[in-house]
Image 1 (tube, rainbow, N blue to C red):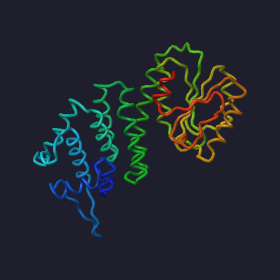
Image 2: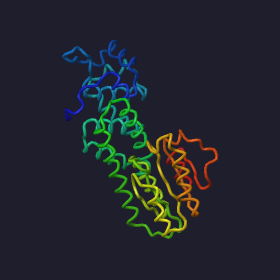
Image 3: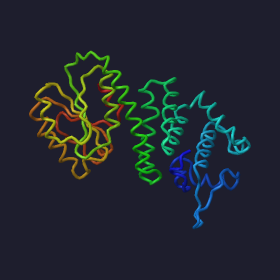
Image 4: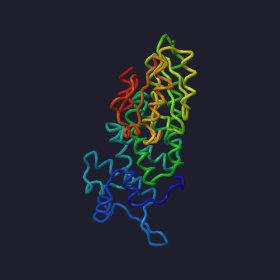
Length: 299
């Protein structure tokens, strides 16, 4: 394993595995499950092997194995038992745990092998909903709690982005577009979190619609040019960190004035920043969605 992130606090382990620090301490004291090390300044830490072991132990525990039983299993047999259980059921959680390891070790081969294994059981759509979306939620938490660095986030999201692009291109190469409706997907100024929007683009194309993907950080005024080419347009955007909550209503009103009022266009929006928006009395033509799936169901 690459020596990238080699020291974890017990809080890191809690964030990465979902096992409470209190429980980890009990398992450690009562069953000698982990053997924390100490820095030169006598601060306790756990190594990467401890993290991997705790992931596997937690997985077995969630699948009905008592901790007292797990601690009697030979250490080298634990990963084999995990793989055996995962091959029969609960593939998703095992895959998420494996992707966490791939992310922490910058292990591209492990990511590809995990994805390839998932394809035996699921479609790309299923992998995105069942594995990638939960994984991305974990990434947000881990990044906010300083458990991982931005480099880890960029590594794993770049690999997921590659899969979305490859699957989208495969559909586009076969598509015969007879749709009169056009979807225009974009992110507002300084918004760069595009994975959700990219998957929505994949799903729109899969459903046989014409889609124009503009990507991140698109100025509002530049959207007006598209209206010179198409009549029936639905703009779609994903507000993850932008616009700021204090500017949310101003942005909505500006979009209404610049884009919606002069046309018959519509505006579909989703993303966590919308929790700061009063959705009462929104301009006509604007629709809010609470998830990717709810938006796709609207198609």
